Length: 496
Image (cartoon, rainbow, N blue to C red):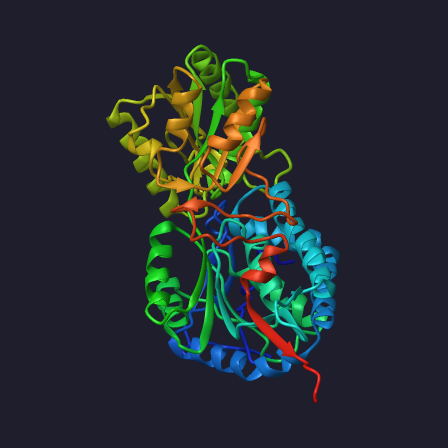
């Protein structure tokens, strides 16, 4: 009897979805999707699309637009609701796939997916809400009203850190508003977007309304952003990339919605509950391995409690169990790829060179079962000065910098001292202090006695300064972002 080990199954090759068909790329090339917790695990092969594929997707979306636009909004909402229920039905399978391709623990990918499900249910109902207003005219026998109309073809470019939530919270409202879509997901996490597209196909999305192309962000992104047939670009990514997209769209005044970086702070006053603050920072700083645009990367602590806070946070960081996100005991998974390990470690070296005190972590983890993955130790710096690079630049990894301050006024100055304004939090038992902070903090999201992460689907999401360009995602505002206001004047004077 043979005892040979069976050959591993050939990994599946996934196709683009263009004009209602799954198609290979014109280039004929593919790229590998690798599990960041285990480099030997090839999840699948995806199309390395080129400009010709993008043009085909845009052509299909453009052709489908008139019919989709004419479909009543409640019927568009019904399709989105069905898709959300399909995602809910397949939640366990999809969440496991997301953990394998992105790395974060299963409980986090389940939350990522649940956000998409909840928002799909929410935004489906927006199809039955009033889309405009009727207002009185200053002229007799005249009516004035506004309605919303879709823009046309929308290009959606999404990141890898929330591979289901972000594609869903862009695609669902864009479709509900009556637009057609070309979706370009991050190359590190294309399988999650395939699952989203499959759900919408099963829900009955018509041919050409939704199109998916995978491949290199620079080539495909530029093709989407510069094509005059694309009426709007919605991007979540780095501030650097966002500026380029804004520049390209600005050349012909096309709309772009940009959700960009953050350098999010938690302020801990001397009257704060330290246990609650430490627990919140540990989750918001090291959850998603720090790869979250709202992750806590700065903790601005009153000098009276700075040492105690640093000791407690370091202890919490050292207790975190690092490993494969599919294992139930894992608290923190890998970074998304080996390139991110090198980038995060470079900031650790920068922090030490700047004179910050490394309390714990600060190194890649490659021992034993972690050897195959892109793991990095949860890292805490203290005695950080506000002007240091580790306190100003987005690291996008499990690195938290503790900045001591003398009083509330200094805490607010430091919190507002970066180019970003996405998310900020404060811990204090004083109602006066909390009320002042709500007024004084310059950020799009403010949390009181909680960490800097955790969006709710029915509330607007977005930042100030260089964290975005003023648009908001989620909530009822999301549909407005993907539509245009049309003002109508109706005169009915009496004849004779």
